[in-house]
Figure 1 (cartoon, one colour):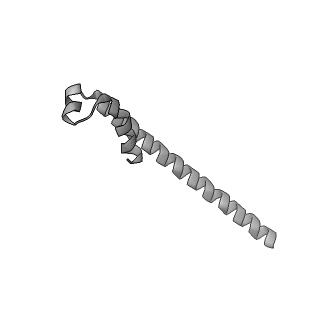
Figure 2: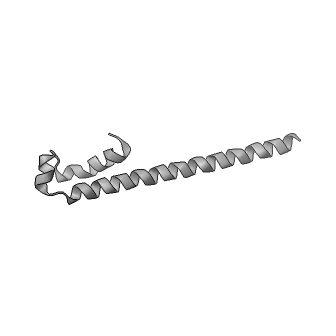
Figure 3: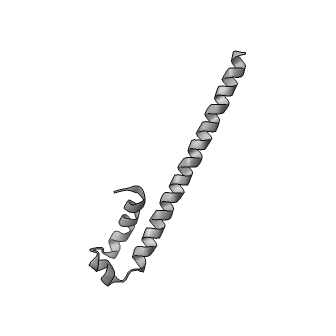
Length: 71
């Protein structure tokens, strides 16, 4: 009987790990979507618009990363 219980516990652990991995992948995909969208939107601005915001083009990759993953 104990063997059956251990097998059930192992299976639940595997399923929990699988759910966690799926959630982590979804979160990563969401963050990458935010990063890409922010990057594209900033790249589409004119140099003057960026200057008005105090942003240079070289800052865009870092700003996009920070928007998705935090500063």
